[in-house]
Amino acid sequence: MATDECGGLLDAGGCCPVCVAPDLSLDAGSASSIRAGGSLALPLLVSNQSPVGRPLFVEAMWFKGGDGEMKKVDLTFQRLNPGTTSEVGLRTGVLETAGLHRFDVHLVVATRHLWREERYVFTAAIVIPVEPEDATEVVQNYNIQADAIGAGLTIYNPTRIQKEREQGIAKHAEPIRLTLRRADALDRALGHRGYPSGLAVTKSTALVWKGFDPRHVPMDGPIRNTTGVLEIGRASSAGEGGLNDVRLVISRNGQTDEERSVHISRRHFQLFIENDRLMLRVESQNGLLVNDIAHRRGKMVMISDGDVIKPLVREPGAVGVRVQFETQHDEVHRITLQRLLGPAGS
Image (cartoon, rainbow, N blue to C red; front, top):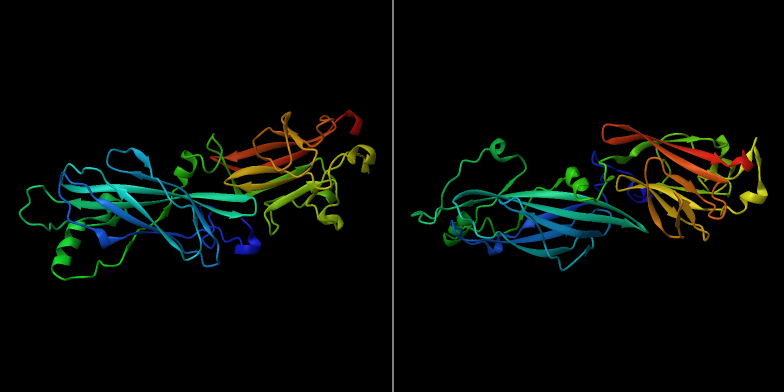
């Protein structure tokens, strides 16, 4: 999110493993034998393993059993400071039949920096062997092949744990670490990342500038600065020795209309990519329009294909920026931002 903090280390799913490092474990301390017709409590431990001191925010947790129903888990915490752990208790419900029962845990976590937030969904799967109700032998051996049930699953056999405890074996006394995997399909299905249409704007999406003075815009390509945020307004651009990334003024033939451009704030709005979406944040006290809808200072707006950003609320036709997406499959690989000028400024 902010490369001056984490160095921009993004994995293939757009997640920074330095800032976002959740860990999920199954506390075996309260395990007991389980047979068909019984239920099982699953004590989970959620921890933040960020190596750079970033807090982690647990936004939601979902639990899915054999019936396929996603059940939201009530959480008593949200913020996890680095190195801290919180407990969550789950219950399987009645396990009617003997054999292997699979349960999926979906964890929605977020990392925050100033007013920005990136959300990700992680998933872990637990397989629980359940003994027949009338079994004469408490422990049953299962020959489980990974390709038969899916790689990355954690096999949790409380019946064997209980039996080994009775025999004085303590090797399961420590929590069992679960394999957490990124769930990008759930990111979108649950509405945490990307657009409702299924499109995604990634950190590698190129921005192309049209209709601007070349001195007033950065080079075409992904956002390359350390903050990941483009500052846009009337003040001079970085190419002119200023602080803005993009200078937006009303001009003709290289000559700025100072009288009309003065109504554009020195830093009017920001553009950035967050949760696989192009986002705008209003910085001007005067606000702005997006598709003729007014937004006040501090408002965050998701920008979509075909949107027109109009910085002057009282003279919306004077200047604007039209946004156009070019897609490949379900990703936006290029965004064109074209400056539009009204008749008086063209």
